[in-house]
Length: 98
Image 1 (cartoon, rainbow, N blue to C red):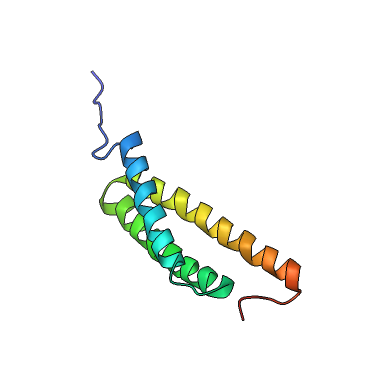
Image 2: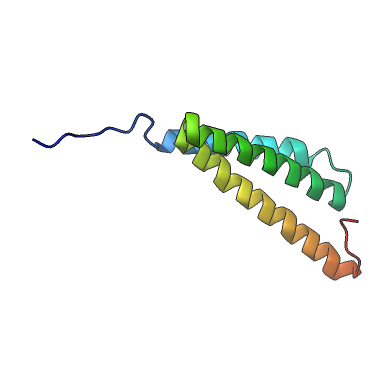
């Protein structure tokens, strides 16, 4: 007989959804701290960086499903922030982050 190995923390849909919901709330709360486009972008970058650090820790020592949800929503949040910055830059011709 061949040995069978079970993963200690299997990825589940509930875990991914929980990580996505927490990351969405995290990015939303940090994004609301910004007073304008520049503030929103910088706060979102900071919140996303902290979320990815948390996801890296979860991948190594915790639930990889939650880490997956956090990483997916963080990437989406960064994409939205980049689109807003690019749109403001295209409208005004001035780089909004400085």
